[in-house]
Amino acid sequence: MKKNLVGLLVIAFAFAALSLTALAQSAPAGATAEGQGMHHGMPSVEERVQHLTKALSLTTDQQAKVKSILEDQKNQMASLKQDTSMSQQDRRAKFQAIHQDTQQKIQAVLTDEQKAKFAEMQARHKEHMGMHGEGGPGSPEKQ
Image (cartoon, rainbow, N blue to C red):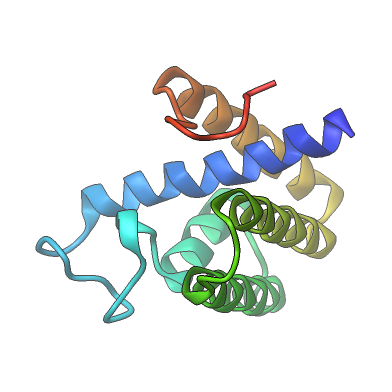
């Protein structure tokens, strides 16, 4: 249970860290590669695939699979954001579940060597985001 929570937090922090990198390199304020884009400078699916390709040396086949996984995640997140029937706590739990599911699907596409690098990347992002007070007001307890 604790290991799953750690994995979930790692992927959430990794996506947040990726969004900061993309934001720093992005076009003029408010512009995104996907038109509307997501709030908080979330990188596009293509930017995320490019980042993972560079970091993990993904093959063409892996890139296609990861892109499909990330597009599915993007669609699920967009639907969840539009769902006003859920409480904030339930919505946060669902976001976390989507992140965890995405992480597991990406890991299933990777080789053992890539999985190790991916885990290392996530640990660094978690550490970095922890130093910047990620979680904020109203978030679940960190431990």
